[in-house]
Image (cartoon, rainbow, N blue to C red; front, side, top):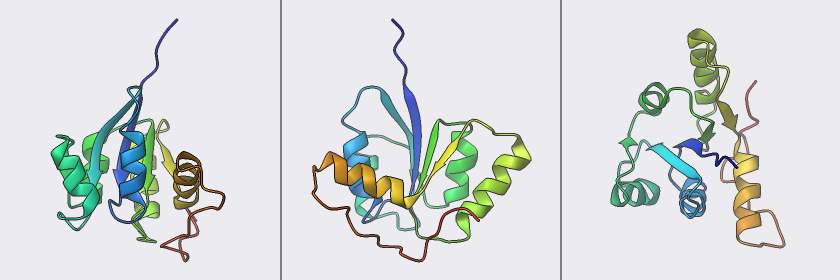
Length: 130
């Protein structure tokens, strides 16, 4: 039996990213390769630093450094960032990395918390990749 490890990078370490980061860090089969937030003192950035996870204040620096990760969680609320990341992946031929949308992150957090309701969006204008 083989054991698979998922590599995950996280952009947005605030209200959505921090609880997701806490949940993901609980599993040995998940490797958090880096966290990015423009606020170097956000709760998720502090947590990542405490756990010696590489931190970036420029999201594209994380994208470039992380390379072809399994999942890139993008919950920053920056509507233009997803398109920038998508263009970069097309440019570099990255066909491996899945970009995870805010809605999926909220679903995972809700499931982990066993919440009877989906947690609210802090970025309702974020409609995903155009």
